[in-house]
Image 1 (cartoon, rainbow, N blue to C red):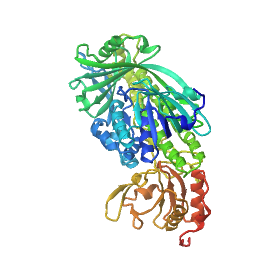
Image 2: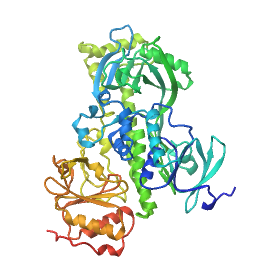
Image 3: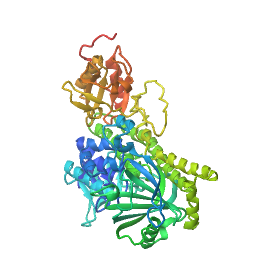
Image 4: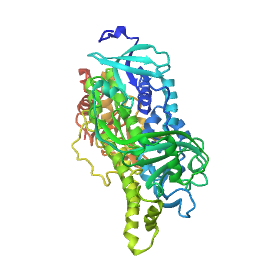
Length: 612
């Protein structure tokens, strides 16, 4: 076979080949289909995930999944809000000692069931909780619906070659053993890093493996033992093994203590569980939880590394890394899958704009510039969360080398009211309070700001956060996610700000006296066939109304100013007030974002109202 295959020799010619059918790959497929871009998705795996992992879906991620039409079925199967409003720490789980199963502390998580006002202010979508084993089939069904016959599992990419015009990929249908060639303009590597990074020569960097974890996916009736129906994640102090363990309900039909399925995690120091048999891991689980004879079905035992790594680059010519192929996180904080879905959201509108001739090729360079720093921070937070849990175990006096009696002796100091135990008790409770950041990191989820050629600085200083992790303070500072607000139209119908941004389209939001900005945008559209919508928002005047001044509070412009929002709902430019030449200002900003120039006919503008 020739080393270079021409497009004519390929069996399939497609603008975008997506390699990998997990959360990131399926999101890419849905987004690009929605944008009118033909794709082929291939996954080496025979099915979607068989593991109940990566279950937390944060608000920003649910907004994206809402865009592609899967939020409603996800929420229908997700943990109800009232069953995921807290995390709890417990003194063991079950057993003869009256203190076993005793609640040590409880903290709010992920907006406390969408009752925390900060979280309600951040988004019209609440967080969800649905393990990948049930999430991915929903996503795949929608991807199939949007792109029939072009979502192919058990089709493995074995080789690829790039040239100046595109990429040629060799795909093997593992069901039949036949090989076929695919020719694509671009390839998205969403395969978890199994193949694509190696084929394009991109290494990963990071701290590597810091610990080893064993996970058991079980069916068992724990309803008489698990307490607190509001608790999603139970951190269990296990004196018998000297480690902290985690117990999480997995549904599928009931949640809280009545959940039919559960996952049990325990992280081992040192060599960990790699030499333990499944039977030994089950025995350790029963010992840790104090349920030696409880009937259960063990569906699967897995062993995995607690690691945080980041690809040195997110792009090699026409191949892009997305999701776990670009970064891998510890699960603490739920930032892994959500980061991958947000990678896809950032990249896909840019690919569509380039393929449709709306943007220059340079727009694609902004993907790595924007996402890599955000993903690096998410990895750091995931690692910090994991380390904080290990430190909490130490603060509780847990020692894997000690006997259960010795561990109990240390633990009872937390319950003691003796003066000599006060510092120990205070340190243990402080360690738990510190862990509030794991499921209360709203500023990590929303407070990032992209910096690239696709974001035009306005010269204003970056806002100083009150709390860099926990407290999200919405802003239209260029590079920020568009703040959320509930708006009304003239009939009083309520609209979410996010829904004003249509797939693949920019949105110019002007103040109530911003007619000139809207006229300038209309001129740009007429002369260049650009995908721009416009709206004026005010409390009394405008096209839409801001009844609670939710938008006015964060818009950062006057009634004569304007904000330009990209298709991924990121603010890319703003002008605080009026301009004597709004057309030049807007066309210059949009041209810089899209990496292109506009036709001279753009100067034929509608009549503008003189700026005051």
